Length: 265
Image (cartoon, rainbow, N blue to C red; front, top):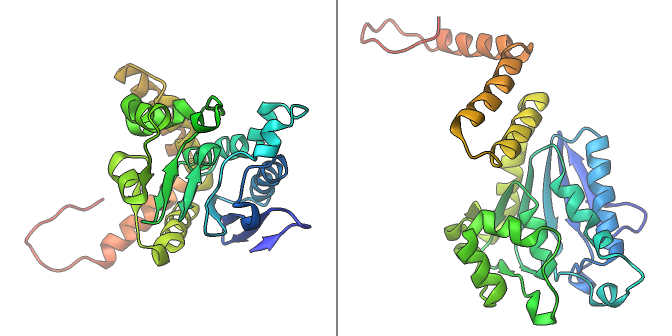
């Protein structure tokens, strides 16, 4: 993991997968303006280097302690500027996967919520805690949280101060799955490599369609949205190439058995 000129966020790219690591454990990876700006810069650098998937990790033991208290008290910095990193991550056009192995607190919960997929370890803890420091949630926190755990879950976590462990987060939809600590980053990287190995334009178009479709209320509207994208996909050169590879694999697996079975002609 390489840190760029003393940045608080490390970046490495391997075979199309960018690994971005929050690297300020002395301050529990708190979202200072500097760290947030460094995160935004890391996402931008990854995309500029043609990363096809992004994995977000953090130096232990805390994933992210939330907004820097000093930064929140500094009224010279607009609140919106504190969310630069999260916003850049949320807007990334490639698949993003958060590997959460420690506590995500307050605005720190925004970072995994900004990702497409969250993998957690049993040691993870999701604790919004905004109201404990007498501040309203920001950065789209309530909207993203309610989409994952429902309005009742968002109320329990934000209004009533409940928390979720990694296993509970996976049970309630905040995380996709919970894996043992040693398997955390390998699992996230495996998913990222699978995404990065697919057609980059198709993955980006599918992610855009997914984002657009969740805002729709009618199945026919969603079908029309997908049809346009599907029509585009079959006109790309990757489509006949992929079909050709499938046909070849089926031919290689053919037997002389007359027992039947499906195949692609």
